[in-house]
Picture 1 (cartoon, helix red, strand yellow):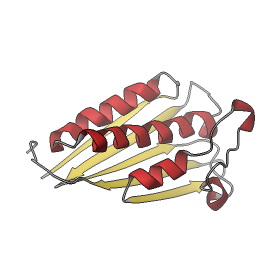
Picture 2 (tube, one colour):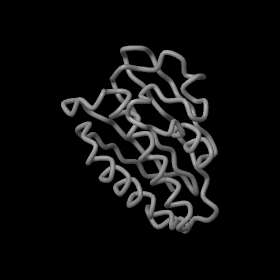
Picture 3 (cartoon, helix red, strand yellow):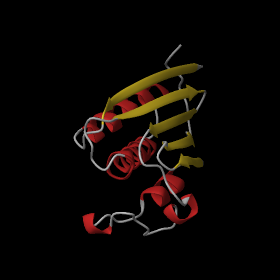
Picture 4 (tube, one colour):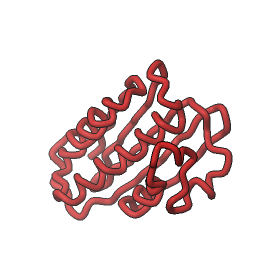
Length: 146
C-alpha cells in the first residue's frame, strides 16, 4: 500500500494548525493509535513553526512545503522552506537551543521531532532553506487506502 500527498501554504502562523490537521487526516488511512496521531501532529507543528519563525522570520509572503507518503505501516514526512537556513545543524539540534530567545521559544523542536519519530534528518544550507525528513513506523496498520 502506498499513497502520497503534497501541500504548500503561506508561512502564516495560523496555517500551522491547518498543516497538522491535514497530515493527521492523511495519516488516518493507516488507522494509527491516538498516541501515534498526536505525535505526528506534534512533529508537524514543530517543523512548520520552525520554518515560519526561524526559516522565514514570520514573513507571511513565503511558502512552506509538506509532502507525506504512506507505505505499509509507515509515514514519511518532508517539511521544507526556502528561507534563512541553519548555520550549525548540530547546535540547532541541541535541547534548549533557540536562535530566537527574545521570542521565548523553548528550543525543544528538534528534540521533540527526534523523540516522536523513528528517523529524523535535517538538511540545511544558509540562505537556501531547510528540509526536515521524518519517518515513523506505526504499531499497526489496517491499510484502508488502495
